[in-house]
Length: 88
View 1 (spheres, rainbow, N blue to C red):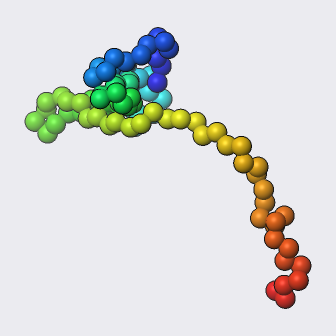
View 2 (view 1 turned 90 degrees about the vertical axis):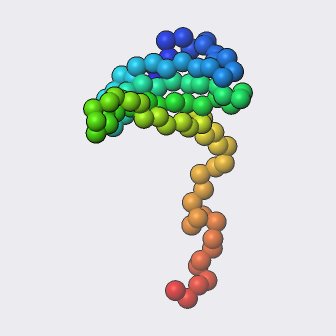
């Protein structure tokens, strides 16, 4: 999602939605962030057409993505377990 103003902070019970620069057809047409009851959520919107021809938005809400940070070492199991005395 491209945010035109990175310093923008949603007020409580408000938000902003922007047109999404889609690279795949399955991606949402619009994306943004809202804050409801002081909880920030990401919003994805798809433009749909009902069987009767009426256009509407289909919406999805999710918690903002937070890149995991880990300080645990990447250790292989074989280095921890001494299996030299096992008969198999």
